[in-house]
Length: 412
Image (tube, rainbow, N blue to C red):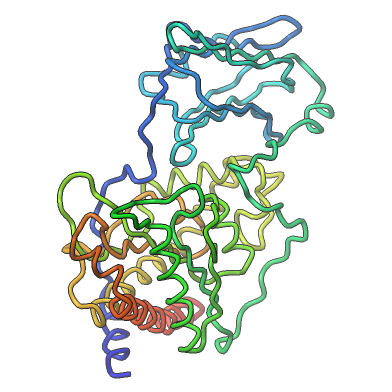
């Protein structure tokens, strides 16, 4: 109890400034490239558009339309957009604008704003078996607004395994102070995604074990309603993890990882919050999501344009960001009190996808590095993991009290 008081005092007196970290954590190593000289978006017959993209190799892809506002979306597996200029591709006024970039780790997206309703008449990717290159071609033809709206929507795909959005949108009722804090614990990786591996051990298994132990520790402490994004060895998409947190009405989201460095040396736990740059990109991506009615709890953004949705998401982040930073500080202080020395820079910022919920304070804890002999041994030590869980518990308890105090000050 004495330590909890000291932790609360430290949390209320000073917010440890986050140390800038690599912004590439949400990126990916692209394999396919676009040959701009052989690519174009131009006028076609019947008031339509012809899209041709020359790729250095074939990749998995999909194409669909979204309504309100009208857009054509092309998703790809690992496309490198560097050197591609949208203005050079665009040779028609039937497309108002083209945007492209990373969608999530390993996936990239191209979005075309349609000046008028058009439907997909044909789309195919032709492979050159001799050179390994590929040519994606799509034809859009003019249609009416009603037909466009009826055909719009992302196709069902297990790689985007978001649950069906709730249609009965109601603002969440204010929670009384005695209500338990809903905690969503996210064991990193799972299923076909093992994460880091060393000596026959996989990150997904180590983090699931720790997540279960942390859940039990929080439940014994009282005052917490704890859920896991996965309780067995199954694959859950990054967006799906955040969607589960929304579905459970989570007050806090904690993702657990233990990375492997191929170069350099690092030891000890680090706690990440979402970087400012990644926050802006996250709001833009969420604003363009087709299932906008579960992006913000209690707010149906369907029917709003991208700009309005982006503004609403940014407003939500203005409140959530300082709460996440206080949460990260509490996690660091808590684990320092039970584990001892952490990483030399324990507070960091990065662009991890699971941190992108606009309305849920979220942190990602790199519990240790499997590439470090010391950390790898600790991750297999039940006593050490118990101290980590106790540190997270202490940090959460202190954060809940400090967060309620901050909320009461805002109300005044």
